[in-house]
Length: 111
Image 1 (cartoon, rainbow, N blue to C red):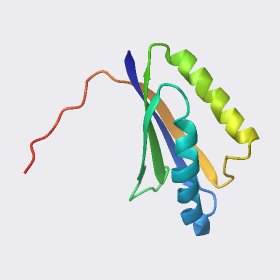
Image 2 (image 1 turned 180 degrees about the vertical axis):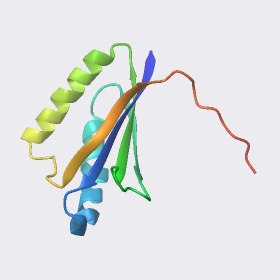
Image 3 (image 1 turned 90 degrees about the horizontal axis):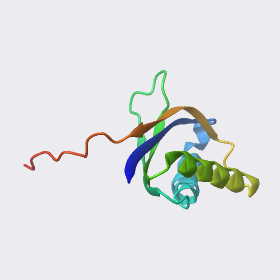
């Protein structure tokens, strides 16, 4: 089984509603995406110096023997959630990528 990382960089369309945006992303969107078979973990980070980049990044860990099929199901899931009104008009996707794991994580020494 191959392991993948899907990244999505985003910004909030209305900075005055960033709290609402983050709440939606964390409590609605991430769980919705994790309903996709093969999507095993999701996490988000905030860029502390976002000039020219997305302020936020979401990362989805995927385990799949057929990434094309997994991404097709992912697209169906996103389209279904959009039709159900579960997407936010505050999200602006500005970048991202799909990466195949080539080296498992290494652990550093604890202090």
